[in-house]
Length: 333
Image (cartoon, rainbow, N blue to C red):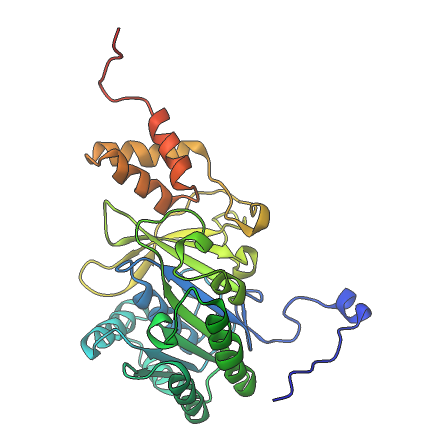
């Protein structure tokens, strides 16, 4: 394969307008054809169900929890962990609750969504199979869930990770003119930005153009905070006043698998230096701490809750907890 590409011309770059090539599938260039994005989060937070429902929304050309879907999209979803019972439950929840049992939506899903389970192949053998699936389904986007199930290499071996992502999967995306989305796990009990939370080395945060980080709520397992930790503005999330934001609160249904958006604070945000997520008002952190204390959580549990709900490190969260006013205790002396 010839990887040589012509040079960009300076006049063309000066005149270029975002998304003018019509290759953007999500947001304003958050996910383009031949590009990539990653959903990252701890075990049990709902990564697979979130990605499945995003895939279903893309297949129908419907926005998902304020994530802008630009057109009906042919989606190939390759997964390793869910049984058919789990996949069926997820699809039924989306069909009955999110789109209200609309029969036209059922036809759209049948035409544009291709789901399969692969749990016996890794490395080069898996890559060959992805290529074959692309030949059959002609997807606009390939979703791999979870990435770690198929790599077949040490995740801190940057050479092996780079080869798998850029040379192997990247070549397939270019050959079939489609995008790549992957689900990836975080380290256990690790706060801070995505590059510190995700398993593996820096290549994961370098390769994927857009990154969405899912954080759970230790007081209510159905509550999830969705944070865009790379390419925040390109995804296009906004508050009620139209100000750009980098996160939304969502909740899974109590009796079925479907997602709803919670009320969002009216608060525009700016990205932090180096692409780090912006800080939130201290009052919001204090409210989180007070709620967690009222629920009887220990200090370590409260610190974990703060890092999961807000873009602060464990060290910063620990300081906030220490600074919080004591409840009903008098100082000695």
